[in-house]
Length: 84
Length: 154
Image (cartoon, rainbow over all chains, first blue to last red; front, side, top):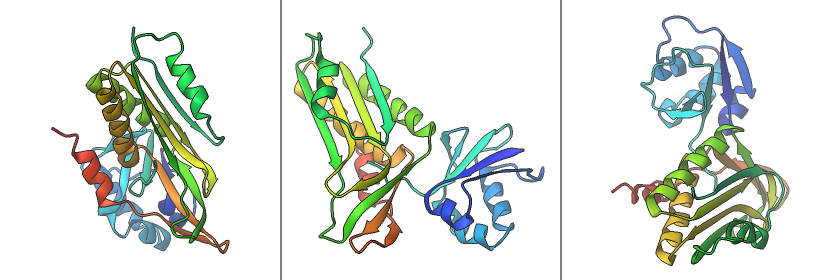
C-alpha cells in the first residue's frame, strides 16, 4: 500500500485529501503514477489532465516526474506552490 | 555557535517585536536585523480573505532546509521564518522572515533568499475568498516568482 496525499485544487478535484492504494508493478515512476491515476476515474482525470503542472513529493521531499517510486511510503500530489 | 534557525507554521498571528527580541537577546555579535512581513491584500477591493493550505510536516521541513541554506550562504547569525495557515483576512499577517547578521547586506540578502525560495518551494497554497463572500479560485503560481528564485542560482 502506498499513501497518496493531495492538496489545493488537486485535492478538491479528486474529492479526497488522502487515500491508500495498491499500485500495479508496472507503475515505476512518478510519471507512471500520474498516468495510472488518470485511468481511475473522471475526478482523477480532471485533477491530472495536465500532468506537467503537477508537483510531486515522495516522503515529503520534492521529486521530478522521472523519479522511481519504489519504497515510497507517502506520495504528495499538488499544484505549483503559492505561499509566502 | 551555530546560528539559531526558528521555523513555525501556525494558525495564530505572530508578534514582530517579540520575535526580533527572541533572536537578538544576548547576541552582541548581531549588527543587522532585516524583517519581511507579508500581508493579505485586497486586490483593489476584490478580496475579503485568503485561505492558506499547507502540507503539514513537509512545510516545516522545506522551510528549515531553505533557512539553513540561507544561514550557510550569507553567514547569518540567525533566521526566523513563520508562516500562517487557515483563513487570513485582508490586512492580516501571512508570513514573517527575520534575518540577522553582523552586517546589513547579509541580512538583506538572507531575508530575500528565504522569501524567494519559500514562495516557490515550500508547500503552501492560497485560495481567494471574494469580498461578496463567495469562495474563489486558487491563486496561480507566477513566473515572476520563479525568476526571483532563479537569480540566486549563480
